[in-house]
Image 1 (cartoon, rainbow, N blue to C red):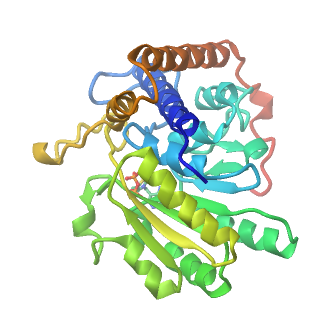
Image 2 (image 1 turned 45 degrees about the vertical axis):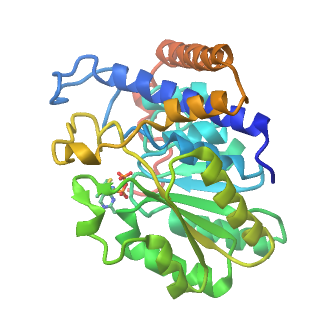
Length: 325
Ligand SMILES: Cc1ncc(C[n+]2csc(CCOP(=O)(O)OP(=O)(O)O)c2C)c(N)n1
């Protein structure tokens, strides 16, 4: 898999669309809310954990996958979902609680599910790991191709589920790539105060699998590391813990003013950096970069209009799809 100019241009397009999605949802979230404190109700029900800063992960990792591959993500799923090609209209409707949403408006922003592109997410941290391993095992038993990729934060890497699933993936050499997104913070707890070692990717040795840390929030570097992990998985060499240094620019949730982050630890925005890099490398011109941004804004405006125009589910449907009570 080669890093072509088309692929790199596509990374910028996907990152711009992901950011447009988050910025539109952030603006909507604040409608009807008390500024700064996030009290009150508005058109966007529930909490909102945005991906601003982590877009290179979605673009780089999803760029290395094929349609057969399967993804599970966590409570901060937008960048992965958008870059995977989850239906943007229905994803937007899901956040607004509309019946046209991917889960008929009952899942909200943490529970994005689109079987058309093998994508699911859950608000329970590290929860997506076992289903990812299960899907990889199922494919193996069915003699069908497919690598499973599970996305989580560095905070979730201290959950019990992480260790249990990694052991089975290592033991059975399952084609599972565990993407640990290291934005340094689990809510307001620093990685250095919660994790015994500096790099979760070093834990891979304890599970008999490959581990790689990418100290760069650039989709080119992420793509190349992801492509190496995908190749190992497809070649039958088992899983990889791929830890990616990234940024959390919009706070843990809305209303988080991030007062606990020292000024010198504030992270850079990767999108303008990548835009400048592509222009410097002669992949695109300034005008083409502006056109990519304009197209993303326009596409998101259409998705938001679809979501706003869509009807709410009927109250009589509230208990549909409840399997046990
Ligand atoms: C099992 C479980 N415990 C606690 C929570 C509450 N919670 C939501 S996000 C979060 C922190 C997650 O940090 P990290 O995994 O580093 O991801 P980030 O938010 O930084 O992307 C916590 C504790 C949860 N959702 N699930």
